[in-house]
Image (tube, rainbow, N blue to C red):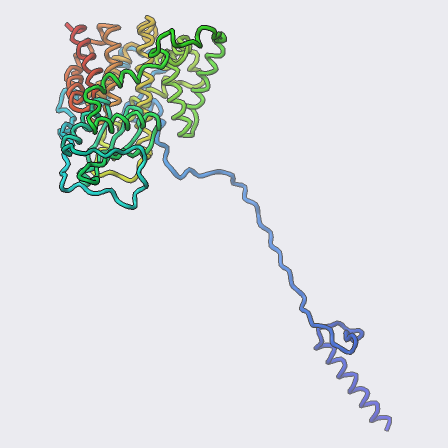
Length: 479
C-alpha cells in the first residue's frame, strides 16, 4: 500500500515539473490572482548595432564652372598673360608666332537675315492663348494700322535702341531680344478684338527698370508715338541724373558736405572687388565684375579710386595686384575665351525654354570685362597716364590685346555689345599713339571696323556710332 502511494506521489511530482517547464513563468508561487490567471506577456528582445562615423567631410561639385580659370601656361594662347616682369622681343616673337591665324580680312561674319524686317502674315496671326497669365501693363492693342507697319516700327525701335533681336522661324509672331544691360525679353504679336493687333512685351530675365524703359519704347513705337527719337533717348538715359538736371534744381549739393576719402579707404573698396573676383562662387564673380565696371567709371566713383582700379586692370606690376592679379583675371576673360566667337544657343532659329544658362553667364562676364577695359583705357588716356602706365608692356598690348579686339569687331554680328567696347578701346589707343594705329592697319583692322560699322547700320545703332568714330579716327591717324 505504501509502495503504491509512493508511486502516485512520484507521478504527481513529475507532472508538476513538466508543467513548470512548459509554463512561461519561473518556478514559484502561482501567478493567479483572485482565481484568475495573470496575462501572459512575451519578453522583448533588443538588438543594437554600432555605426562607424565617416571621416570624409567633403562636397562634390556637380556642375562645371562657367569660367575656365586657365593658367598662363595653358590653353591656346599659351603664356599670353603678362607677368610681373616685361618680356624681351625674342619671347614676344615666339608667342606671336604661336597665335592661331586670324581671319581679319576675310569674309564678314554678318548674317544677312539680321537686316531683314519683321515680316508677319496678318491672316496667320494667332490669338493669345487662354492659358497664358493675365494681361498686364506691358501690352497694348493697336487698331486701324496695317500689321507690317506695326512690325516695321518695332524693328526700327529695336535697332535704334541697340537691342539685339532674333526673329523666330517657327513662331513668326515672336521676336527674342536682349538689350545693352543684358535684360532678355520677348515681343509677341497676337490677333486682337475688332481687327486690332495685340502687342505684348514679356520679360524673361534681367533688370526690371531697364526692361520697362525698353518696354515703353517698344509699345509707343508700335502705336507710332515715337519715330526716330530713340537715338536721343538712348543717349539721354545713359547720362547720370545729376548731369541732366540744372544746378538751380539740385538743392542738395549746396549744403552737403561729403567726408574725405583717404587712400586707405579707396584701397579697401578695391580689395573687396578683388576678393569677389577671386571667389570660387560664380555669383560672387559676377558681382565683382559689376563692381569693377562701376569703380572704373569716374561718373560713379571718385576719380582717384577709378584711377587705382584702372591701373589694376592695365598694369600687372601694380602693388595692388600683389595678392590677386585683377589684370590677369580680366585679360583671361578677354583672351582665353575662344567660345565667345562661336554661335551660341541664342543664335539658333528656335526660341529655347532655358533662359539663364552657363553660356549666358560667361557671355555676360566677358562683356563686363570689356566694359571695364574700355573705362580703364579711356580714363587713363584722359588723365595722360595711359602710355606711361603701359610702357613696360607696350609690345604685349600691340601683339596680343590689339588683335583680340579686332576679332571682336569681326564677330560684331554675334556679339555686338562686345564690338562696341572694342571700338572704343581701339579708338582711344589709336589717339594715344600712332604705333597702335599703324599696327591696327597692318593686321587688317580697317576691314574689321568696316564690317562692324555695316552691322551697326543694319541692326545696332550704338555699334554704328562707336565703329563709325573708330573708323574716322583710324583714317586720321594712319597716313
